[in-house]
Picture 1 (tube, rainbow, N blue to C red):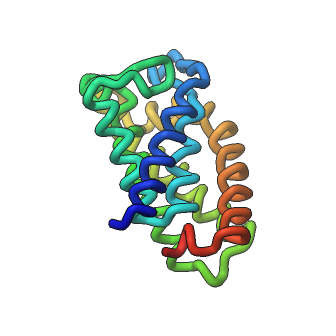
Picture 2 (picture 1 turned 90 degrees about the vertical axis):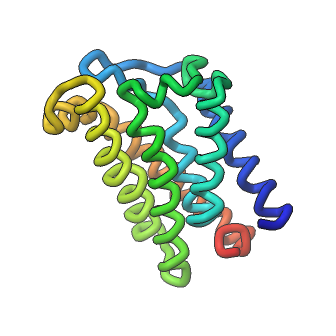
Picture 3 (picture 1 turned 90 degrees about the horizontal axis):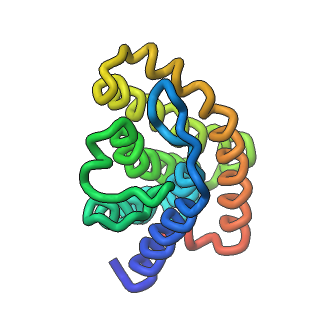
Length: 181
């Protein structure tokens, strides 16, 4: 990794921390909060690509595991990975990687529709699949109940997909080498 890569990774880890400043709203069924932070892996993957996007999330998660209160609501420490949100947090890194991989793969064919589809796939389908599986284990409920309990998140996450799509396409036009380096 060169200096530019390190700066991008650190910048997006910082962005993820900043998005944690928005207060969370915790749903009673699953104990998983609605936060702005799930926008960051979408942006990281779509703008930085697979490797740098995933690394920015991993850096953020390492800082959280070390105890920095960077999660929404000022949470931090290794214990948060064992709670109901743990699968979503690990899923953030995988989501960023998948989004970045698909953006890189379809780089020459990106438009609003397929960019939104890629971000929705990685940022909702993949993330919910992993996160809901862990919620089911952590809270001791069925996968189906965890999935139904996550439905209120869809509206906000769909809005995040549109924000990430607009930002990714704007960056692609203005700085094409950021995403495809």
